[in-house]
Image (tube, rainbow, N blue to C red; front, side, top):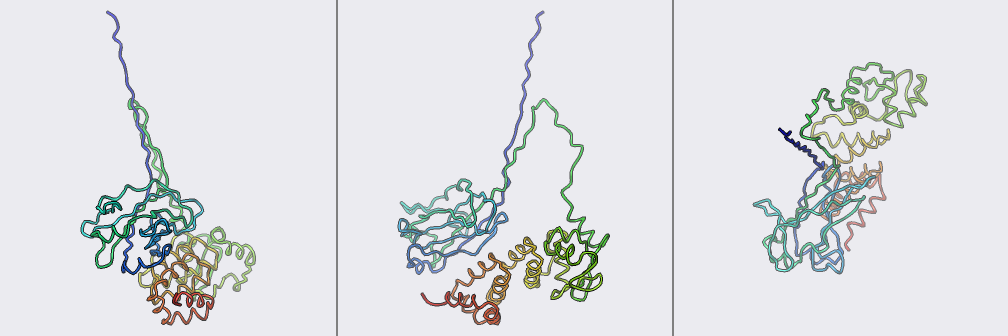
Length: 374
């Protein structure tokens, strides 16, 4: 009897997985017919919005961004951030139907409504980089469409930020998957350092702020702030305290709760929970503290939160703060808010504006120029 030949087959699989964050922004245009009278190349910008941890904005040209696109609406997605490494993202623009909340697109040739084009390929955005459509829609096509109602319409921009791509795979199917003997938990250094701060174990320096004392650790403070490093291992080394006497370092012009929140960020890299009604004022104080101790990430966190609190009654004070502490992003957000003549007039009547005129006279000249008729 001859032997019977047997055959075996092996199988394997792998997956390429993109880690992404997505979001969208509505830009509502009021007074469409008046805006079309603006000259070619005149740009209007949306408020900054956040997707994937980055600030973006939409640039809107009501009569085209250049002569070649005159008679069209031009729209661009702009990376509002200043970044060290380029940001990879996909995007698409369309009109949103208020009832179905779905995106639609207008065909410029026959004015027929159709689904929007698929998202663009993944583009690389540099700081303030812009990509979009110089001929997004012909003015005539929009005017004959159902999207323009009461001289208004809404554009929606969908954004997908691609953080990184990873590959996962399994070996041959005839090989058993190795059991997982060890499961590594997520990092918890911040939790341990927070416990160290609360327990005051090994604390070797004491601060006094606003009538309260706080024990801390020189090495942690020095690692997080070059200012603390210079003070604690320079002028205050060997127990000498340039800012106080004895073994207590006195922090002037800072409330106790502000210094406590500063220490929280030093040890955990995050701000403590705050009451909603006090967050804007608290973040202003914390921004000043972050600037004092050269803690740049904390400063940017405060800038980002304060952008959400810009309104007619607060913009003057926040703008003065941004100017005095060199906060470029926060200043841009304030000036963008004040590009509206109504917002600017109301802000100029506020008490904060008089403070702004005293502390930052150069900004006053800039705002007066903005308010002057063209």
